[in-house]
Each structure stands twice: as structure tokens, then as C-alpha cells.
Amino acid sequence: MSGLFLLYKKVGECMANNKQINIEFDESVINDCYLDLLDNESRYLILYGGAGSGKSVFAAQKLVLRMLEESDHKILIVRKVAKTLRESTFSLIRGVISDWGLTDLFDVNKTDMTITCNSNGNQIIHAGLDDVEKMKSIHGITGIWIEEASEVEQQDFQQLDLRLRGFTTNYKQVIISFNPISSLHWLKSVFFNKQRKGATIRHTTYLDNKFIDEDYTQVLESMKEDDPYYYSVYALGQWGVIGQTIFNAQKVNERIDQLRNRPPMKKGQFVYTFSNHKIIDSSIKWVDDENGYISIYKQPEERTPYVIGGDTSGDGSDKFVGQVINNVTGEQVAVLHHQFDEDLYARQVYCLGKYYNEALLAIEVNFSTYPIKELQRLGYRKQYRREVLDNITNKRQYKYGFRTDRTSRPLILADLVQLVRENIKLINDVSTLNEMLTFVRNEKGKAEASQGKHDDLIMGLAIGYKARDQQRKELFELPYTPDPDNPTPEEKHNETIKYMTGGTPPSALFKGWG
Image 1 (cartoon, helix red, strand yellow):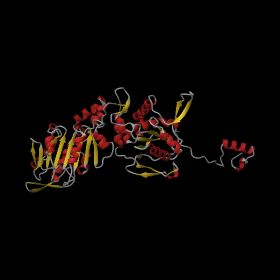
Image 2 (spheres, one colour):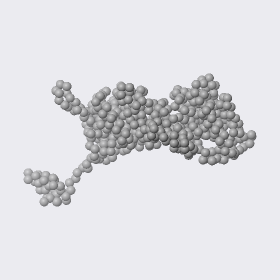
Image 3 (cartoon, rainbow, N blue to C red):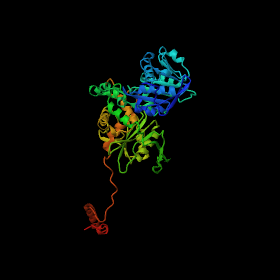
Image 4 (spheres, helix red, strand yellow):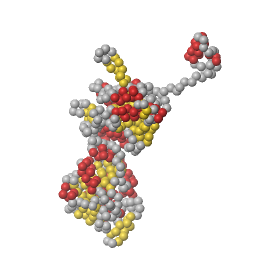
């Protein structure tokens, strides 16, 4: 490419040889999927996805632009191992400079891998996280690019993040680029499982890269038939799973992508008046709170029956859960997820059940029966009943609450696995889906959460779907009002009997009687 060339949205200026130069821009040199990120000033810019998506090239392009447009920069580019930088980021930056015809504006030191803009003194420095002494000597950082961040330990990231501090002439930004190899990685828990303040996330694949060559596209496409799982992780950039997950990881990842920009309709919790050890039903109110522990995806609909599956915190490592299911459609419509005292959990579930048309409550009783008994004491009688055999009388009786054991647990999980495989669009909660990516079979074949992960949302949902059989699956009937002009045969019969036993003549009630 001949001449001085650069991409941006407006005419830019830089100084070279003590002369001001106007640089004209052509947007066609950058992939369309990244154009809006040129002006992005988020503290964290997360670029992740599949191979061949152009995310690393874009990171290099953005940094070259900042080197020319802004001043007082010392940008640090890191990877886990120093020797991998030369053929990756160092080569990419030099390639962008060369392709854009800007070689005269930069000094490149191939020995220590520094790149300096000779018009303003801005500098790019490369360092490996394994080169401790070099890292200690670098000060005054104004921007950071962490390439192949999946190789980096969380404590390394935290130290880098702390170094980007103090006053700078321009905005401070950490660019983090990587392929999502494992759903157990710290990057997922820090930036994806919950919304990180100051973070912009962009997912891209080879399908977004207009510069990719046809041969490489065919190589990636061939994986669809040869190894669908490898294609989903390596080509489509979906989170990989270590271990044999019992849920279809590809479908779960696809659903997470669909929901990424669809937050809950609202978040919050219930407030109520508690008097004489009871909740006053008429006082129950919903309160919006962006940090609330109840996520509502769909509001309750008139005449619609609902089920709430509950999982208690057990030994304290998990949270209390309430999974709300529309029993007509089977759709997950709300989720309660929080660490409570047991009595406060029971009260919120009480309110949630009232809110969703007196929903059927199916709360697990493996670790404690307190929430069930507290709901009974509060007056909530519409609860799941399990059949038990009395050891003394040998008679069958019914008790409130759901018990998961070696028989029921595999069955409810198998039903949930089938639902995910065949109708995953019924699930709307990303946190629940994230748990499915870390729910695997151990070496003995038992399905459980990976070490350090949780399964409370999964179990609550599985219990809820199992309890659907004890709740009606069609709309509640409207209150019946007799039509005097068109009495039913049953109404005619009943009123005749009443008349024959001394009641009011039917004709006085029904015009159509006779």
C-alpha cells in the first residue's frame, strides 16, 4: 500500500520531521465487526472467539492508531512466555505499520522488541510474564494488551491491572484477547459469569472476518463433520469443557450467545409487612433493584399455573435457589438465587409463589426441613408432596418437600438433559446455563459440579421440572357465571331438584328453563 495511510472516522493529525501531516482514512481496512470499538474507552476490552476471527489483528490496529493520534503513551504488550511474542504481537504490530505505509514514522528495535513513534515519542514495549526482572523495570504504563490471555494466571492479570493507574493524558485500557478453551477458566468467572463494571466484550468468529482466505475457511468448515465439538470450540469460539459434561455443551453455548444481550426484564426482591409472625399478603410488593437476587424474565400471566423448584444451600457452599417455571409452556420465567438465613429464604419463596399465581412450591428437604415447615406455618399449603413408607405401620403417607436420593437424582437430571437437548430455548437464565458447562461426570460416572463449581441452579431447575406433574398444565378456568338465557342441562336438573324439595322455582332463576 503506497503513501501515508491510516483508518479512522475523522481526519487525524500527527507530527513527522517537525511537520504536521494530515492522514486520510479508509474504513475498509478494518473488519466491520470491530469498527465501533475504535472509539471504545472501556477499562477492559475483551476480544474473544474462534480462530481466524481477526481479533489480534484488530488489537494491533487499534494500538497503532492510538500511537499516532494520542500522546504520552507507553503501551505494554504481554504474553505468558516472552519468546512467543516475537512471532505473534511484535510481528503483527510491524505488519500493520508496514501495510499502512507508516514505516517512516516508527523506529523498530528488533532486539528488545520495542516500537517507537518518532513523531511523538509514544512507545510499545513487549514483555513475557516469565521475565520477572524486565517486568519490574517497566514503569509509567498507559495501556496494556494481554494476548492469549487464557495462558495467563489470574494473579498475573491482577498485577498488570494494578500497574495501569494514576493520571494519564488519554483513557486507560486493558485489551484482553483469547480463545475460550475452558469454561473453568478464571476469565469466564471474572468477566462472563457476572457483568464486570467497565468491561466491553466482543465475540467474533472466522465468519466475521472479511479478509480470511477461502482455503482456511474450508479447513475450519471441515471440522463440522470431522469433530463437531472441536469445531464449536476452535472455530466458533464457544467455551470448551474439561471432562465429560452431561449437558450438550454446544447447545448450551449457543443459547448463552443468544441471551448475551438480553438481560432479565427486571431484577429486585419482595418487601412485605410481617405481623404476628405472618406475612400480610396484601402488603407484598416488588421492589426493583439492579443488584437484587431475583431475576424476572417474564411476568406472571393471568390464569397461568406455575411451579417453583427450590434447592437449599446444604452445607453452606451453595446458595438458596427458586426456579420459576410456566407449567403450560415449560418455560423458565424467573430465578431466585442468593445466600439467606433459612427463614428469610422461606419468606421470599412465599412471596414469589404468591406473585406467580399461587405457584406449586417444590423445595428440597435433603439438608433441612425448616423452609418447608416455615412455609406451612406462614400458611402456604400448595407444596409438592412426596410419598413415603412409614417404617412402623408400613403404610404409605405423604409429606411436603422434594427429596433427592440415589433413585430420584439421576432421573430428574436425565429429564433436564433431554430438555436441554430438545428444547433449550425454554431456559432464559445465563447463570443456570453456565452451571451446565461445568456439570460433568466424575471418574465413577456420577454427574456433579466440577471442583470449585456449583450445581444449585441446576438442581433447583431439575426439581421444578419434576414437580410439574403435581400442577395443572392448562390455564385455570375463569370463574363461572350462570347465563339466565341459556341454562345448561345440569343447571336445569339441579334447579328442578331444589324446587321439588321446597326451593325457588327454576323459572325465577333461568329464563330458558322449560
